[in-house]
View 1 (cartoon, rainbow over the protein chains, first blue to last red):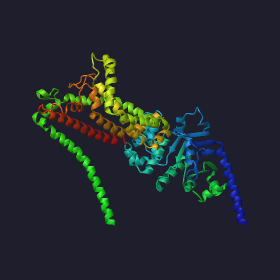
View 2 (cartoon, chains in turn brown, purple):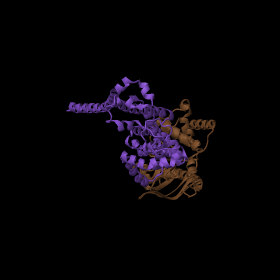
View 3 (cartoon, rainbow over the protein chains, first blue to last red):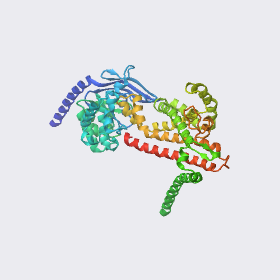
View 4 (tube, helix red, strand yellow):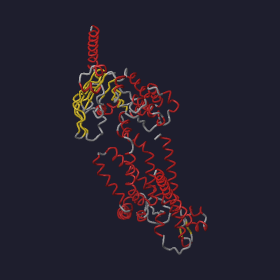
Length: 277
Length: 298
C-alpha cells in the first residue's frame, strides 16, 4: 500500500518536471503551425492543425496511413506548390517568418530544410556532384571548397571512408542504406536548420535504419528534426516529442513519455496500444 | 496435364523467339537483296569512284553518287538543327510547366500533326516555304535562288519530325521519377535549374535515342522533300542551292528509263547506300548512348 503511494507521488513529480520542460521548449518553437487547412480538390486533408515544433529536438509525427502526416510534413517546405488543386489556408511560421506569406521566397525556405524522402533518390551524377549539387545551385563554384564541403558532410554521415575511393563514380552502386545517408549528406550540404524525414528509414534494412537513427540523434544538437514515421518503436527510440495525427487532425502533442505512458486522449491510447494502425 | 502445360509454355516461347528472329532476318534480307541488285554496277565501276564522283550522266554511263549522299546529309542535318530546339522547348514546357489542361489540349494536336500525310507537307512547302526563301531570305545572302533548295527541304522536314520528337521527348521526360525533381527542388533549386541539371541530364540517353529515330525517319523521307528541294544532282554550295537526296533520286526515276544500261542497278545502289547510312547512323547513336550512360551516371 505504501509503495503504491510512493510510486504515484514519483510519477506526478516526474510529470510536472516534464511539463516545465515542454513549456520552455514550446516558448521558442522553430516551426509554428497555426490553423493550417489543406484541401486537395474536394478532399479536406488537414483540418485546422495547430502545432509547435521545438528547436533542436527530434519530433516524430505518428498516425495511421492516410492521416495526413506526410502532407503536413511536405507543407513545411512548400512542396505542395507545384501540385494542382491543392489549397492551403493558415500559417506556418519558420523562425517567425510566415512561409505562406506572399512575400516569402520559396527557395530560401527550402534551403532552410533538408528533406529526406522515403526512398533514397540520388541525382543522376557522381557521388561527389550529388553532395555539391546544393551548394552549386546556390552559387558556389570553387572546386576545392566544394570538395571540402563534400568531405565534411560525407564524414558527418559516416560515409566518407566507404566512398572516398569512388567519389566520381555513380551512386547507383551504393547500397540503399548508403544511398540514404548520401541523400542526408546532400541535404546537409545546403546548411539547413531543419531536417525533415518522410519515413526516411522505411525502405532500409535494420542495420541501415539503426545507423540513420543514430545520425538523427547526433544531429539534433545542431538541427531541428521532424520525422514522419510509421513505426511506433522508432518514435519511442529517438523522439523527444511526438505529434499524433488521425484523420487530418492533430489529436495530441507531447513528450515521448507523455504520449507513450500517459496519453490524454482515448484515440492516442488505442493507437499506442495497437488497437488500430 | 502438367506436361501439356509445359509443352504449351515451351511452344509459346519458341514461336515468339522465332517471330523476333524473323524481324532481324528481314533486315538482313533487305540489306543482302539491295546489295545483290547493285552488284552489276559495283562490278562494272570502281566502288570508290562511284562514291566520290559527282558526275551523274546515266546516258554516258557515268554514275557519281556524291551529290546525292551530300544532299541527304545536308537536308537531314538542317532539319534536325531546326527541329531540335523547338521540340525540346515545347516538350519541356508541356511536361514541366504546363497545367494538365494545357497539356491535354496540346497533346492531340501534336499527334495530329504527325498524322498529316507527307504530300500535304510537300504542297505546303512548295506554296509557302519555297517562295518565302526565294523572295525574302535568299536575297540577303546570295544573288539568286529559286527557293527550291536544301533549306526548303530542311524546313519542311523539320516540321515533319517535330511532332515525333515532341511526343518522344515528352514520354522521356515523363518517365523521370517525381521524387528526383523533388530532391532537387527541396534543396532550393529553381524549376529551371531542376530541368536543366536533373531532367535534361537524366533524359540524355532518351533524347539521343529520339534524335536517332527522327534522323532515321528524316533520311528516308521522300515525297515532301522531293517536292521542295529542286532535284538537281549537284553538290550544293550553300543552303540556297538545289539538291537531290537519295530517296528522291529513287522515287523520281525508278521504273522509267530502265533501258539505259546499269541504270536500275545504280538506283538499287542508291537504295543500298541509304540503307547503309541509316545502319551506320543507328549503330553510332547506340555507341554514343553507351558512352553517355557511363559518363553521366544516368
